[in-house]
Each structure stands twice: as structure tokens, then as C-alpha cells.
Amino acid sequence: MKVVIIGGGIGGLTTAIALSQRLPEGSQIDIYERVPDLTPIGAAISVWGNGVKVLKALGLGAQIEGYAGDMQSMAYTSSTGVPLCDFPLSPLYERVSQRACPIARTNLQKLLLDGALGARGVKLYLNKRAMNMAQNGDKVSVTFEDGEVVEGADLVVVADGTHSKLRDVVAGRAVARNYVGYVNFNGAVPITPALGDPRKWTQFVGDGKRVSMMPMGDGKFYFFFDVVLPPKTASHPDRYREELATHFAGWPQPVQELIAALNPATVARVDINDIEELETFVSGRAVLLGDSAHGTAPDLGQGGCQAMEDAWVLARCLGDHADNVAAALKQYDTERVARTVHLVSRARKRAEMIHGKDMDATRAWYAELAVETGENIMDGMAKTILGAPAE
Ligand code: FAD
Image (cartoon, rainbow, N blue to C red; front, side, top):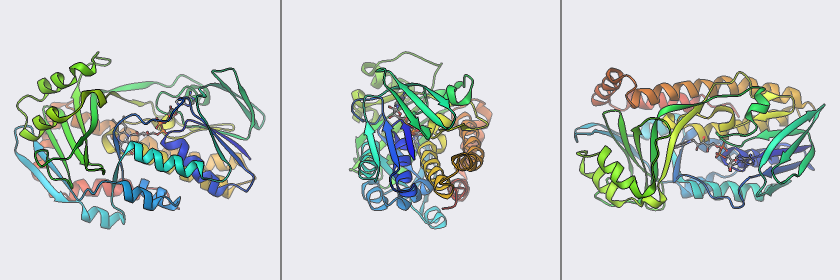
């Protein structure tokens, strides 16, 4: 079997590893990635229990646990410095039988890349931007920007991210990307006592804005600032510190320390978008996976974890129906569309609540946080994690 994977991000690399373990010997798994050198965008990512379990099943458990930050508790504080809640995460970890693994994106990419390059039958081609694809019977061909046409694929996995070039081809129509309403500034800083407890995920909330610091390993906090702004508001790294100082003037001291400590040149500033929910991820012998299928607001921290779940399920379905790709893709679609589309709409609703789309609802959430024991928050997280597909 010849599989072409478009995109060497979290979804594409995880898929290559998973397929290599499930497809018959002699299968060819070729990843085509547009950049000449794989460097991740963004500082870190929180891989929750469902994602970690996929990586463990693929034999990458020791690596992810080794790199990840040690996050043992979680707290919310108001923008005026009033502690709202603070609780250990151990009940969540026990309930889902897995701790969370917040990890530098460079480290996650390294472990996935090493895993993919060491996997049977996998090859990676860099500097290859896919532009289009065409299906002819049971075979698919992909055209690249440099003019090359790769022919004869039995399956094309479209894992080219939220800005996917090929999504519309698979969907057979123009799929909308929608601004969720806020901008996220994220990066990494060395942990210092002035910033906070090195094992706690701390968030500050007020006026529909949010600041977060999460231990990500390597002695650093992964931080982000969420600010509600009109879509496509122009900015430049030279102005980030000043902008954040304005947006978060008067917020508690650790927030001010963070603004002073960050390096604007390494901060990623992202307009947060999600994509319109799709009814199917499959067209013939082409399948969408990860953000190309279900790009989501990061407010549940699940986009990357869902890409890992997709990869795991696709490989299982193909392994179970090795001689019937259509049946395998039908099974994948049945399992993945419902789960991921639901998470996209939940994440959007959560983004709206956190970021003051209706300030009364946001204030009600702040009031809930003030009486939160951790039980409700962890119950929501556990349900998401435990909704993961069976192995
Ligand atoms: P990507 O990681 O975007 O990879 C796509 C790859 O395809 C890239 O390497 C790209 O260069 C390549 N490519 C693109 N176009 C082409 C082309 N035409 N031809 C060839 N190659 C191409 N998720 C979590 O699970 N936990 C979190 O805590 C979390 N936090 C987040 C915070 C922010 C601010 C954001 C924006 C997202 C967050 N996510 C999180 C979501 C997560 O980053 C994505 O869901 C994940 O990266 C999706 O993986 P992917 O492989 O589908 O896409």
C-alpha cells in the first residue's frame, strides 16, 4: 500500500508512526512537508491524557513523560488579585489514569520526527508544498508547487493544518475559517519565584481577558495572553510588550513580571480561528486529519490531542480493513467526525464565555470560579479525555 501524507506537523508525523505499525510490511508511507526545515510555531502545547495515551501506545511514552513539565495543580486569580480557586490535579490524573504532559513544541516535534524517521517504510520529503490532488479510480495523484506530480497513491492523508490547501478539494466546496474573537500572544520564559509556583498552572482572568502560565519542562513556563481585538488587527513584535502592558495595566504583580520577562522577538501572536464543522472527512481515497479536518479554538487544549487520536484511529481502521480502504475510511469517518465536530463547537462556546462575548455570562463564570473546588473543572476535563476512542 502506498500512502501519501501531506504535512509533517503533529497529525502527519503521528499518522506516519501509527500507520507504520499497522500496515502490512512493504507498505510505503511518504510524508510531504512544505517547509525546508521543520521548526514548530508556538512555544508549547498541553498534551492531555487522551493524547499521551496515543503516544504511549505508539511506544513514545518514556519520551513524552521525560520532556513534559510537572504540572500538579491549577489555580485561577482575578485581574484584581483575588484568588478564585486553587486545587490539585491528582484526582483528574487518577480518574483518567494519566497525568497531563505540557511540553515544548520543539520537544514534541523532535520525539515525533525521530519516531517517524525510525519507523518502517516512512520517508519524509521537505520543501514540498502540495497544491492540488486528483482522484482516478482507486488511485490519487498530488501536484506540488515545484511541478512534481506524485502518482499512484492508494490513500492521501491531508494533514496540512488549519490553513489547509487541500481541504476544499476533499470537501468539494469552500470551507470557512472563522475568527473566534480574540488574539493569543504566547511564548516561554524561565520560571522564577516572582512568576509563581513552578508546578502550578496559574491563570488570571478579568474583563474577558486571560493570562496563563503553565510549567512546560526545561525549567520554563509556557505563557499566553488572550486579548479581544477586531480581526486582523495589525501589530509588530516591537510593540508587543507595550501593548500587553496597556491591556493588562493594573493586573497582579506576576502578570507585570511576566510582561517584563518575556522576549517579544520569540512571542507568537495568533488570531484565533476555527473552521466550519464538516459532515465528512473523507472523499474517495483522500482523508482529512487534524486541524485540516477540525481546526479548533485552543480553549479546551485539545486540537493536537485530537490530531493524535485521528492518527491512531485511522491506523487502526486501516489495519482492521487492510484489503478494503473504503471500509476503513468509512469507519474512521464514523468514529472521528462526531467526536471532533462536537469538540470544535464546545471550544468555540468556551472561547466566547472566557472572552466576554456576553459579559454577563463571563461574569457568571468568574463567580463560579470563586466557589469552584476543582470538582467541576476536572469533571469536564475527565469527560473529554475519557471520550477518547478505544484502542
Ligand atoms: P499543524 O501542526 O499545523 O501541521 C501542519 C503541517 O502541514 C505543518 O508542518 C505545515 O508546514 C504543513 N503544510 C501546510 N500546508 C502544506 C502544504 N500545502 N503542503 C505540504 N505541507 C503543508 N492543542 C493541544 O492539544 N493542546 C494545547 O495546549 C494546544 N494549544 C494551542 C494553543 C494555540 C495558541 C493554538 C493556535 C493551538 C493550540 N493547540 C493545542 C492546537 C494544536 O496546535 C493543533 O491542533 C495541532 O498543531 C494540529 O496539528 P496538525 O498536524 O493538524 O497541523
